[in-house]
Image (cartoon, one colour):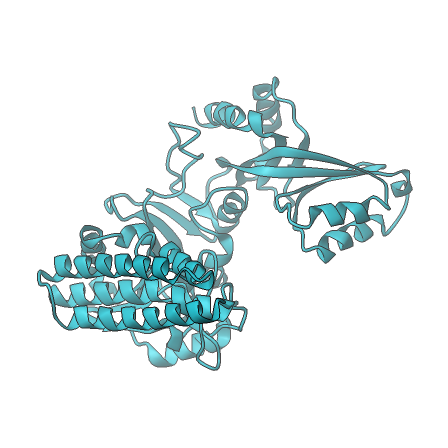
Length: 444
């Protein structure tokens, strides 16, 4: 059994949905379950509708809804080579439901998180109706599932947490993959125990795919997107970045955390826990093998580079740190209270420096921190991360890094506790050049 997840760019129009079905058809002997996102841009359009309606701009919202309707109807006509029929009617019914929700939001001038989830869920529900109809038109045996019947979440609408064990039980009881049959489900959406529609937040469709994969003990989860896989660096910065053939789960997590946006580590956790490999592949170039993310990587040394900009460095200078206990715990309690996530930390006997990328609530937090010592703030910083296994086992590694960056002022240096990440903090203005320099050093 295999899970195939397709992102919004992969189902953007009739031509690309055709490519998706070409891929799915090849996998029919492996009992595939296809998980789809909304068509590219549709989720944003639905959010804009809800926002316009909540401000009383109902005409703008309904005009945007009509544009979304026309796009889906036109795609349907291209896929099925007809202008009307049962699938068109099914799409119209879903659109009518959206219209009623938007009109309700407009009347009360409010869109609650619960209502927002109800609105945006239609993106995936519409796209999967199209994909299922197109598959049937090709003669493929299809079963269209409703993910809300299987993915159980809490009630934190717009960013709900999946309740894994109840979800696994429902999936195992209600879904039985068979060779030759294509199962189709929506990514991103689920429902509470009371049956109220919810969404899983950032990376929700990837998360849905690995939830289904873990529950059904898939041999592989494939995430199909618009890139060939994970690259050695951001191709917008490094033009000769190359594809990484394989990564360990921990390496992929570090890359994602420090800026690589192909796979978010949290979303593949269900697969990680069961040792199910996750492969990132390009829908536009299915002949490419992509990047395989698995339990362990056989390759040592630097695998890829990643950057994260918009970083703020906070340094607290205090002689009270000297030979004191509990000092750091009191400082971190302040960050916890203001819900500010700390990334990298470096300490000395009389100071501690931390990086954060969430400026929200930073002002009040700094006010509290000043009771512990002098607080220094440095904005417009960036983290450049080198990721790979056993970096420090190569005696020349550190020398190569710092010799290559001899002309770049470094603000902080941090080696991850897992020994797979060296983080360098520097000015944003320097990070692109530094990434190109290090990429040339380790991959040139």
